Every structure is written in structure tokens, then in C-alpha cells.
Amino acid sequence: MRTPMVSIVLALAVLAGCGASEPAVDWHGKYTPTVKARLDGLIKKKDCDGLRSELITAKATDAAKKRLDGSGTADLVAYIEYGLNKADCKH
Image 1 (cartoon, one colour):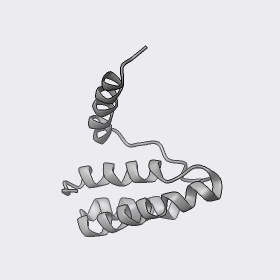
Image 2 (cartoon, one colour; image 1 turned 135 degrees about the vertical axis):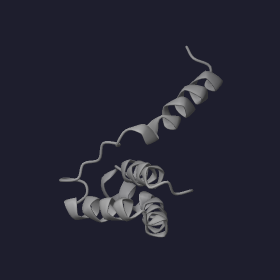
Image 3 (cartoon, rainbow, N blue to C red; image 1 turned 30 degrees about the vertical axis):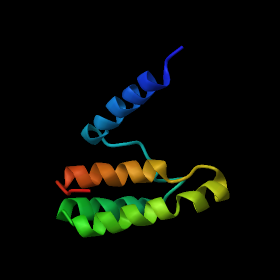
Image 4 (tube, one colour; image 1 turned 135 degrees about the horizontal axis):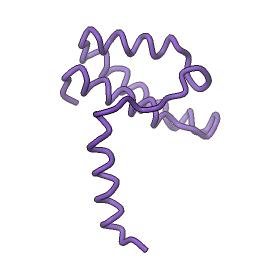
């Protein structure tokens, strides 16, 4: 059995490495491919303000998405944070 501190340290280590590879997101079921295209466009243009705005929206809609289908937006948030890192944006 792990102690809570070990679990927290492991979780932080995993999160620290998240910027290295693209997070998995269900672009053809949970979200539409146009969402990915919009985010990828912002990443390519290094539009930090646009990405931050998308991040705020994704976080703000998490509770509603959880109520709707139980899934939340954690995967989308992870993808946007990945994009912020890839675009060299501070967040």
C-alpha cells in the first residue's frame, strides 16, 4: 500500500512528463474534429491568448460535461496544456 505522499509524488512525475507527448483525446466521439483543427491552428500560430481562452472554457465546462455524460473535460484540458507547452506559451 502506498502512502498518500508517494501517490502525490508519482502523480506529479507523470504530469511533469505530459508535455512531451500528445495526450489521447476522442476527437471523433466526445469532441468533433473541428475542435482539434481549431486547437492545432492556435498551436501552429503560437496563439497563446487563444489557447489560454480555450483552456479557460474547457475548465469552466468540466462540471457541466460531467453532469451530461460523466466524462468531464480533463482530456481536453490536457491537450490544450500540451499545446500551450508546444507553442512555448506560459500558463
